[in-house]
Amino acid sequence: MRMKFNKSSQLLLVSAASLLVAGLLTACGATLTVDFVFVTSAKAAGPNNYGEMDVFEVNSESGFMRQIPTSPFPSGGRNPVAEAVSTDNKYLYVVNHDDNSIVQFVIGNDGKLYPQNTVNTPGIYPMAIAAAGSNLFVVDTYQPLPTCSTAAPCSGSIAVLPVTAASGSTASTIRAPVANGYLNYWPLSVPGRSGDIIVPTGVNVLASGADLYVTAYDSTVTPHVGYVFGFSIGSGGALTALNGGAPFAAGTTPSSIASDAGGQYVYVTDSTNNQILGYQQQSGNLVPMGGSPFGAGDQPTAMVIDPGGKFAYVVNSLDSSVAAYSMSNGALTRLGSYSTGLQPVAIGIDPSTSHFLYTANYLGGNVSGFQLNSADGTLINTQDSPYNSNAQPTAIAAIPHGSQTK
Image (cartoon, one colour):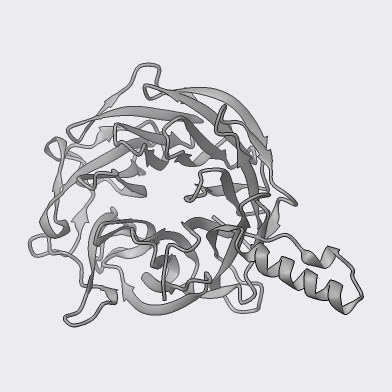
């Protein structure tokens, strides 16, 4: 998510008194910032191949997004593909795919980012992350086996990294992964198909913090077979497989996963079949809901649900659109479709007021902003949308303005 201010430079005043007034207007405008939005970009504008992060401030009245003066910031690695914010809004965690790393940033009260800690993930090529409580949950494309590589792929894994403060310190830092027997990760495998290559695509933790789900597909078979792997989260973050270790069916190629604020409903986008699979969450198990699957646009890639549980929004990569849905007892009814920049791959809703929605547009090299009508779920473009970012934006996250300290 991102935030911007109105331009006081539109007032071309020449007298000293008028310039003073203009300065006061600018200072007052700063109080209108409703959120800070962080957008990772896989490719910086310069000659190096390290990623960067644009930080936007969002105007609470117009939704206008403006990069803060010191933006962008280095992502601390190559090809950042995912990010998450700590539950206290003090830290931003950025996943750098090509370096197998997670960089922890302190978020300043002005939205600036300060790198604090960098750790390697247990596996190879991390591609998704979730933060819940005092734990990070990171999904790696391949397990950390010596034989695993792009040339010789193997199944992926999920790992738990605690985030705690050292004795006598108030600053939290990422710790060593939680042990799983002699391993420090949980392999993803389908009972009876141990030789198949399972490719993870997303991770979601229920609002209760009790369960998490990982979307994946079996790349060994054609057409692919999609799954959702479920885990309960125990003391210290240790995971226990749900459903006896058997995954839940999830179409052909699940591309993202989301759940409502109450933890009653879980949704999975299927990018091959252009649909959204809906489930009722019952004691950790996922039961397909009536009416599912629900229709989506062309190649749905990411989904978000408004905190009130009334509306859902899905970005469709090949349509360059965001589709809006109303929700009733979990069932989705399509409200309309709205144009974004080229190839949207990530989406978020402003956490302060749930009044603005943002999409990161990979090929467009920009961020689309929308104003969300809380009464009927419809969207309209915010002022001057879309907003320029670095090349190939990949992920989006946000915090309320004033929620963090440094």
